[in-house]
Amino acid sequence: MSSDTLTRPDDVALSMGHIALHYGKAEDGPLAARLMTLLGFTETQMLPLPNGNFYRFVVDNAHFARGDGIIYLSALTEAQMKLIDAINENLGVGTEGEHPAVQGMRDALATDPEASFHFGFLVKSLEELEERILTLQELADSDPELKGRVRIGMNRARPGDAEVDARLDASPLFGNVTRFAYGSAGVQVFVITDILKASQLGDHAILEFDYVFPGREQHILSVVEL
Ligand SMILES: [Fe+2]
Image (cartoon, rainbow, N blue to C red; front, side):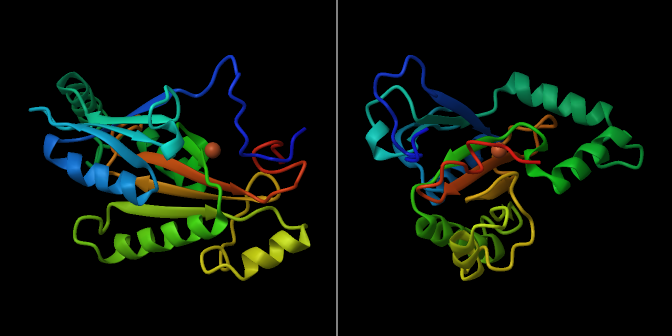
C-alpha cells in the first residue's frame, strides 16, 4: 500500500466527480458561498439566477478545468422546500408533540457526527487545517452572519503513536480534544452548519475535514478500528 495519501493517479477508471450542496432561501446564497470559501474551497463560477445564485467550487485549483473534485452549490428547489416543510409539519418538529424519532436522531448525531450522511475532504497540511478551523471557530462566535450557524466537532487520532500524540498535545486546535477517531494517525474535524441543507429534515449539513500523518501504512482513512 502506498503511504502517500494524496497522490491521485490520473488513469483511474472512476473518480469522485462532484457533490451538489444546497442552501435554503435565495438570499442565503452569498453567505453559503462565503462559508465554502472559509472552508478552503475555490469558487470558479457564480451564475446569478432569480431563485438563488448557482456556484461551482473545486476542492483544489488543480481541479479548475477538470470533471472531478467539484462542489456545486445552489438553492433548494421549491419542490424540496415544500417536502421539507411537510416532513417537519407532520413530525411536529420543534413543537410539544414532536415525534420522538426526531430527538433520537439529534442525539445520535450529537454522539457521532458520522452517524448519518456527510461529506469528507482530505486536507494536505495539518497547520492549514488548524488555522482554517481556528478562524472559523472565532467567526462562529463573533461574526454577525455566522454566529450560531456553525458548530465544530473534532476527533483526535487514537493514541499510541508518540510522534502523533505529541504533535496533537501541542496543537492549538486538538490539544484539548477528548474524542478519538475510529483509527490511528489522523484527525477529523466536523463542521455542522444550518447554512447548508443536506439532512433528513433539511435543517443542516455536515462536512468533514481530515488530515492523515504521512508515512503511516495504517491510518484513520485506510483501516477502521473499533
Ligand atoms: Fe466520515
